[in-house]
Image 1 (cartoon, rainbow, N blue to C red):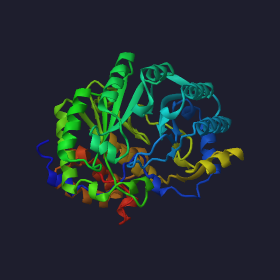
Image 2 (image 1 turned 45 degrees about the vertical axis):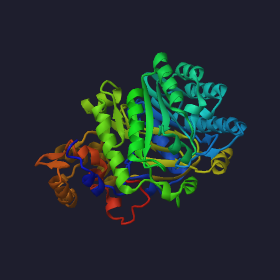
Image 3 (image 1 turned 135 degrees about the horizontal axis):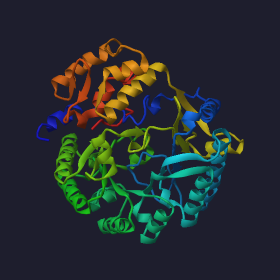
Image 4 (image 1 turned 90 degrees about the vertical axis):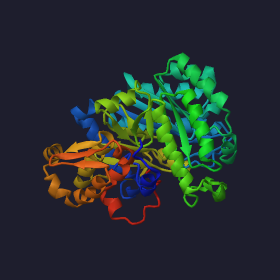
Length: 460
């Protein structure tokens, strides 16, 4: 940690993809249609070897009761709960359309409810949603079943219901415990409330509790964030996701309510990151990668040690790489060598389903080069190393010739102590692991050809 200086952090304080996919979602095209997605589903159903592999499901619940000014998610702010009731009907119809092409009873080993606020739904609606999914899919024992939770929308009784429904992992949105920061982003939730919920979740027996934090928010200072980190150490969640706030008001309208003058200076933001890296590791957390930390006995930390990390649209995962069926407005999925995204507005989403069509509006069929580069980037992002021979054998290429320019670029990163290059492969150093997005960017053909990277968040 002593080698990771503010100067080094500043050098890598540049925009770049998060690589929950490669190519990234900004490369999706409208020319990819529902027909292309249906073809991918049918191909999965007709391949016995692929069909036997468990699926991952993502369900997007877009509704929130109030607006958080920092939020860049696809959400609908409403005080009318009946809108959620109607939405669940459309979700059921979308699942039925999938089953027509996939077949029923497909195994599922990973399920994630995101948003928005999934716990915006009433208890009866959560029960109905899970019952519907279990009717159409086989939820296998021992999988990872998670839900994002707004602490303001649950109590002990609701947590018990989530456990009864089969969820074994919770993710609480905290962001910051400081009262001034919470007021500045329009999300007031006392620390005591979060502490009580995490204690109850442990008593119930959830496998893992995650807490989201954001640094770089308005009114934050290194001193105030240090106090939040101390409280997090007392809370001791199993996992921590530490995100950098990306202020992009031109793209995300809610952020226009944040006064730029209230944002911490770039130097203070870097200090908050350096402080966080040091404080969390001193507290015993394992740096899993990018923005993820976990206690040593958490499944994510174990997977990191054993070289079993995977990465999908929800971030790092312990579950094997698999097809992802995405349900709901704006949801992004992956089937075979394709990516797809549903309509981003509720009206477009519902219109497609009313016409008996899956609501896919854009996506991408990956080229051979995309697939090769995806294999390289995911090996670096998940295992922190790769052997040239494994890529050569899998894709029938000569790695050193195919990636001659990329390897030349990595020479500079090797000089900075971030990677080690050998005749047989690439290894990300312990220090380089903190900048692994920057390492992966060396193999991103689209980023290297694109001078305008402002659409991405900063890589640290």
